Amino acid sequence: MPLPLRVAGRARPVLSRDQARAALAAVVEGERGVFTAVALHLSFVPGWNARQLRAVRRWLDGLPRPWLLLGDLNLVGALPRLVLDGPLRSEWAALARTPTYPAHRPAVQFDHLLATGVTTAAVGATGAPRTGISDHRPLTAELDW
Image 1 (cartoon, rainbow, N blue to C red):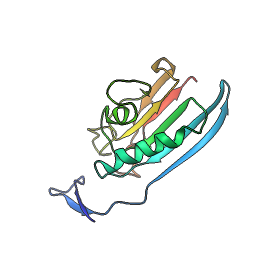
Image 2: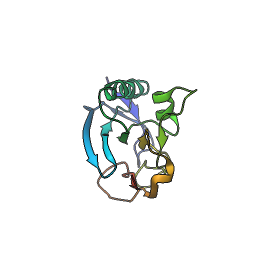
Image 3: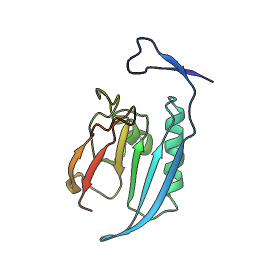
């Protein structure tokens, strides 16, 4: 079912169909031990993206900690942490906070880097460089982990 979507350069919303979405996990052995990194791209449909994120969180239970989630969650601000933790806990840390959408003039952050077992003290430089290949800017962060 098509949904209205605001697109840069268009005065009115356009009807858009959602695309196939994915999550890819890798169990990695780093200098400080094993961790799990998950790259994901969630739906832009409100509610459905939160449901997908909760499903990914349940999937993580069988994988080694710490966990690192990165990618286009299509959720703004603190919403990803609230979806993952609920309002009373704070297991997940947001490791980078910078607007990523729309690419030509970022105003909101749809792309996130979230982690358990990693503090913001481990984060070096962060950014959202212009690439010209997407409607989002990539979120980058240097981690001393």
